[in-house]
Amino acid sequence: MKEKKQIPEVSLARFLKHSLDILKNPLPFHNDNFERLGNTFRLNISFTDSVLFSRDAGLLQHVLQKNQRNYTKSTIQTEDLAKYVGKGLLTAEGAHWQTQRKLIQPAFHKKQLVLLLDNIKEAITSEILKIETSTNFDVFPVMNDLAFQTVAKSLFSSAIDEAEINQVQHITEAAQKMLVKELRQPYLSWWFKASGKIEKHVALTREARVILKKLIVDRKQSTHRFDDLLDMLLDARYDDGSAMEEEQLIDELLILFTAGHETTSNALTFATELLAQHPEVQENILNEIAGFSSKDLMQSLKESPYTQAVIEESMRLYPPAYFIDRVNIEDDNFKETHIPKGSNLLFSIYEIHRDPTLWEDPLKFKPERFIGVPKNQYSAHYFPFGAGPRMCIGNNFAMYEMVMAVQALVSNFKIAHKTSEIEITPLITLKPKNAILQFEKR
Image (cartoon, rainbow, N blue to C red; front, top):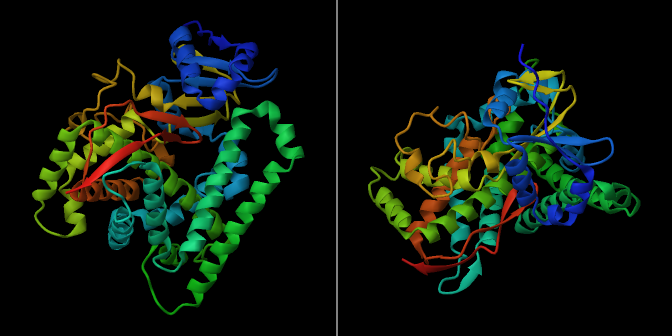
């Protein structure tokens, strides 16, 4: 029998010494530990608590797919995030999650998403018209609004006014910023509670719930059918024939708002910055668009392998969901590593996607690496939407939206050449920083 390998540790003292740097950007700290200690290490974050950090793609595949029944999401999502957005698909576990996934999955099937393509295009076109030309500006707010409006129109068509959308957007973003503080500064948890900061943000989310409840009530009373996601969710039935209860529906809508716009806005911003660094890629996308055989939106998406590859390569370099967390229910073993029951595991997708043993020229932007390859070629070490049963339910929706948005951008504008480095701000998701670009009308 092979001797179990001891997992190297990072001391609590080292963690506290670098706590301010970790608050700003934890990636250099983690990278330093990976380079010193190997692909898996234990970080002590208090006298009693620790986190197992890993960039081992094989271990992640083991956890998400091969032995996924032994793993659950950590309290970061099931409790910390759930107090702001409720028990929806992202934060639910066990039988409750299985029931909700089975109920909601059909709404995100490709043939159902066809019904949403016009709404998606309308939202993208509306937001792109707001772009100013011949001036330097931060593109992230534009992409953030575009992604949020796309989710809003896909969920509610035109049934929600701009003031309500803006307020829900403000609330979801404020709650995320508060959660980041809680996670990065666990030693201040007593202060966040005592000062009322947590309760203030929980109260904000109650305001968002009131807005969503009104929309649901209005829709139930309406005689008009929109065939948007809200109609699909209201139509959905459990095995016993019952519909989703109102509070559960609000939970799911909050999750769709939070997860549906946050990651997409980040990914679109990074993709746009990469397009600015690579003018030849913009020309390749234009050539692909010129070759479309019809104006049918779904057909155009099928004829967009290069644009899709651009998005995929962008998410490889800058994965919005740059960490995946799990906790094992029982003891587990992976190769020579023993993982005690109840271990908190945090996998760095950012590191896995840049691993030189897995990717050729890992730091270079090469969309062609995703062209003409079998679907499973990179499945063992490419996780932009997760993997296994809990893979993001909105992955097809997000890809359609991003392909359409990138093509609309490139069709309407020439993105001026950017030579500076792309900057990042790692929060709950990997966010862009100082994404200053200039657009010229084509």
